[in-house]
Length: 251
Image (cartoon, rainbow, N blue to C red):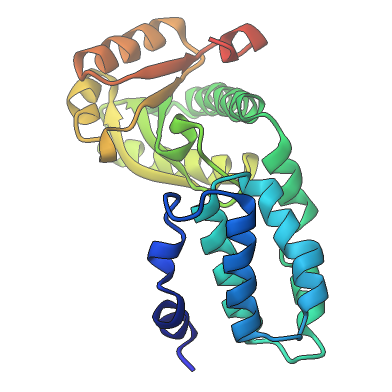
């Protein structure tokens, strides 16, 4: 059975999970209950309503559309499990690490990411200088869900690399090395839109998808100033993390 089309045909899900159509938790529970009973009947019902549903609410709060689409995906994948295994699947599909991430203050998460990025920028700079390489990551521009503060455990970290250097080969190899290390160091998977030299940043910022606000991350105060000037020139709303502290995050 084509589960996705079957669900969409029976319940008009894109419309059902529009926030304007669901005004309360009671409405949400009724819709999810109707979908679940249609697809799974009694199989895994206790585990789904006892674990999966409340865990999803803890993660998404009253964002019924996101919570609904997450649960629909879980319900759909449940069809891949045998009836005697589906309860275990519903109990384990949302892990404790995701719950902890969802309940941690977003400012604290972003602060930790910025601190790790700044530490890595300084580490890679020292390493490249020792190797005599003409390349340096000066900072990162974060845009998308992390800049908008509506990210979750599965969100990508959308970034633009701001760098310096004149040797194209070293720029390319240096960027690859930096992002290999960054992927090991932070939780959200970095998704690099583009890389740009400091002097060309204001032009590049005009093309950020969705006119997203940005977060400026750099360990260098002088670079931070240049990046902020570029954001102002491009008419982009920004926040900055240089010397990352509690006071900085709360700006």
